[in-house]
Length: 230
Image 1 (cartoon, rainbow, N blue to C red):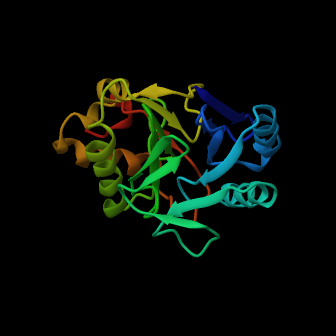
Image 2: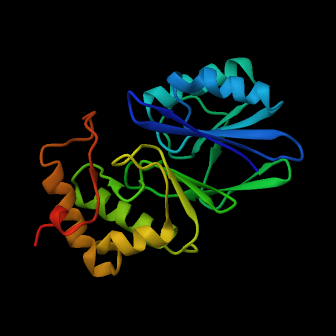
């Protein structure tokens, strides 16, 4: 298996590279300017050919890094079809399959953080971006429609997958950079039943009462009792 995780200690953000070992065709997920050079060194060192630059959600750093990679490789930038007018080579929708040599990558639309947020599934690995972190959730704007959508994306599209599936998030959470479906089901108590969506929404609002869509502030909630209003 060819798989690498990249970490930027300044922003706590995570990026990934994986490839088909037979054909050496590779993909990266959520590249950052701080890790572009490391990614290029890895691609060259392993004699890989970059085919896809996968973006889970719109972020200025991802956009700039994607263009930097595209300028020196054959990588194609992949975004969800609802992403705003930013550069992309391929617009994906829920259920699309991307072929990576002899491997496949599935697109799972997981709106909530933003209308265009997606998760990419490769083998037993889920690259969830800001939607689902390692033991927590990156909250979105405290408006019920978005919070409810985020809850539904997690419960109906991610937590229905096999419990052993690994979660590789877009950001470090409490020092952790990986989780799995079983742990999220067990530790984030409001995902047990659909009746917990109200508590989840109230937790988002309590954590970021003044947050707006234009804010750059990022906060996470872990799903413990301390995060939920009674």
